[in-house]
Length: 124
Image (cartoon, rainbow, N blue to C red):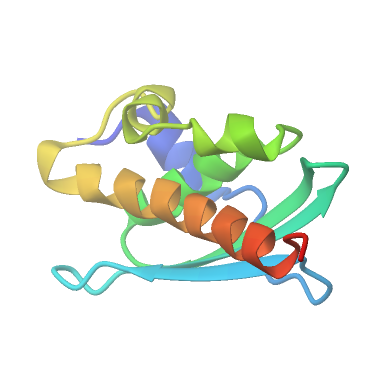
């Protein structure tokens, strides 16, 4: 059984879509269930100014991506890197044990997008 928060983020996902002028993009997938997530970030002055996602997967995967993007929007890159899967699960009001991997995928995609951004923009 999913919480009302999970159902809300599944049926009305926030920040869903593509971003043509993204500063970085990251793709993460889960081989065990076939879910995939693509995260796009726009960064200004080391802050995530905008973030979008596209998730192919179950309701928990979509809800995890939606709430995770809400949690990091407006945060510095370092603050966003500190978001844990436990915080995502808590913000959703919990997930069944078999669906916790969905929150891991969302957190990993955000971290990978930040890593990609930093790699692209590192000082020589």
